[in-house]
Length: 255
Image (cartoon, rainbow, N blue to C red; front, side, top):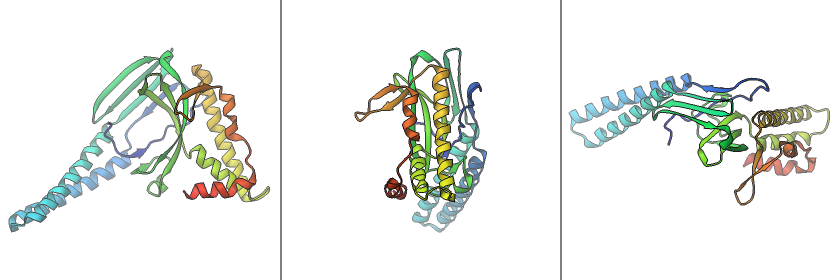
């Protein structure tokens, strides 16, 4: 299990001709904030416990000790974030991975042939300290992401995420349905077009990766089994939605 701050990290859509070399460093804002808060909790807990010991009160000593432990845990996680480094590079038929953090250094190489394909996923991140993509709303509710994972044939241990984008396809779909129901020529119709354009960017990024890596897209069927499909079949994501579906989409957005 990885020990790290709950940060929603940015990994941009890949450019068509850019090297497949992804580097993630520490989130300094989150690390500094947690370090300062943790240091404050540690000092407050230590002072409270010291005063309680002098007064002979067992309860306040325990409370102070708990506060100190919370503060020290925050400091520990903040230091780990400051040390954090992750790199995924794909070239010459090899996937290279390196991660440094609180749990030490992990480094390996794997032939690209050992990967089954590219799996597109929608993911909700309900608990997070920081959202690097949208800092102003980082503490307001869940974040939904569209993630493409290069899935290893033997499971998750050596599967790697190639990009993450916000919001998820499900969220984009719901937003599109609600806005498209407003009719042509309105501001909401323009917003619906923007949702469609963003979904198209997701699809194009996935298609570009599939071509470059010579890997199929993967879909998960009802029995939780992954099957390979041609990327072109995923154009169903972009199928225009009838305006009558707006009520259902609005309900899903509230959920």
